[in-house]
Image 1 (cartoon, each protein chain N blue to C red):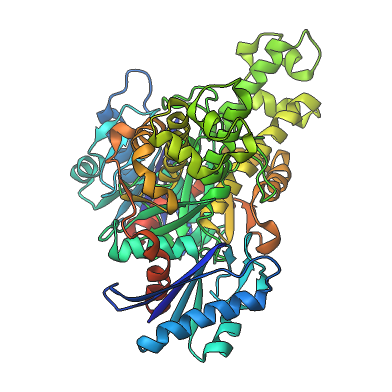
Image 2 (image 1 turned 180 degrees about the horizontal axis):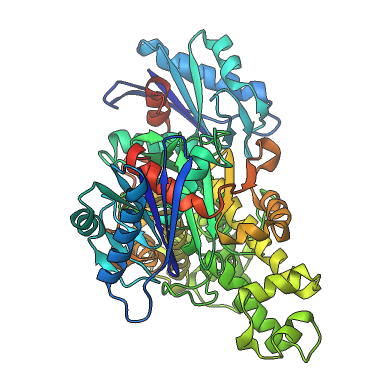
Length: 313
Length: 313
């Protein structure tokens, strides 16, 4: 079977077996600039054809950022892709002559961790993926919770701060404004903007807030800069609070943290665990869940999408 | 079968049939003052014996405020009852010589609404009960979500306001501080404390904040006092926000609002629905869930406990 993970900048595909072993990987850039919905579909189809050249493919799972409907057929809205109410399943099935299912990318990645990765064996799992934004997944009793509209686990748009900063989704104070790569960039810019000078980040950005990027904040933190390290601790604090709120509602036995930021998990996971325990009600009367970074790296998205195309979640 | 709803002030029991019809009701005051854990157990047993005098009882469900463990045998902690790690199932089974299961009271009440009341027929339900505090329940695919420790759906202790008011649970800014009878009382006191005079609530409390009670706020609102009505609208606003956060995570098709405050639902439900739609992400891309007040009144707790003792949820 094959899985494809469609992001705003790259499309990653994999031919995989039932045990989650990756037989072949293909990576292309996501069509950008003036690219149309059709261009992106064609790029996905080309990735699958490439995978199929080496391995027999009977079924394709596609994980994509954005809101996917409950029938797993349509992308309702994807912030970084040219899709609005896109009937992606039908269009790809026409192009490929294979059965296709569409999944939210965070659902796919966390499902992979539950089946083959860090959360293997756990029954009740909350997962978040930290990248540019914050995605989520809920697995209860070994099954993915999709919700009435297929839109469950949009943890990134739970309100963390009433009347807080404005989110691109139109709401204010959304959790992903405080727990994502974008949060690091925004805070880094605020730091550089405020300081008269000093601080490694200020130096790296040559005093210009607009030059600050997420990777620059990471680099400064890695070099030991206290202010940059503080931003990661802040992120960990918000992550722990957000996860504690979810745990008060769902009482999971396992929490897994995935997405690109996991590569720098050492900069925020300790603080996240500490903040989780500080912010979870009735801590004295419960077993705390295990809180782990994801284990499958960039393969998680296509692995989970491929498995979900067969197992259904 | 029989169900018992154990609250801080009263114990309500009912003999019920499989269709949720109440055959007999018994009500006693909860032992108070210097009452021991044993006193409360004895009072529950007396209620069940009274019910059993008129109807054959094979099984008993007990719904109680507080944290109930995953095995449904023990009350870990109950704020308004003299129970700490109380082995209530075993103790009651000894007293009654009948099988007993213990449930969280909000789980029991919302389960009754799902089986026999306002949410009958819905599959994915979020429920809250608004009384002195805020209780909750999650029903997905027709099954009650209990969580790894039996502590799921503690929505009252999700953080609504980072570094907000101090909650009796030890955390700050918990949702129930802004969405419960206690919230109305606290805000009413603040109103009376702040004003130099005027306003019906100020008059009713004779200018003394400590005299303000929840029912007094209701009475002032019913009499048309704008300030008191505003407090209910504030409560509705917070309720809508809290429910929107839960809906972003769980995407239910039905939301039911129960508990004692439902008797004055007309004072806050419109504002709650409005706030829900304002605060739920991607509203344009989803069907909004139905948001309804509960239908079963004070029977809900024992009805749900009785049914859960048989069905298991």
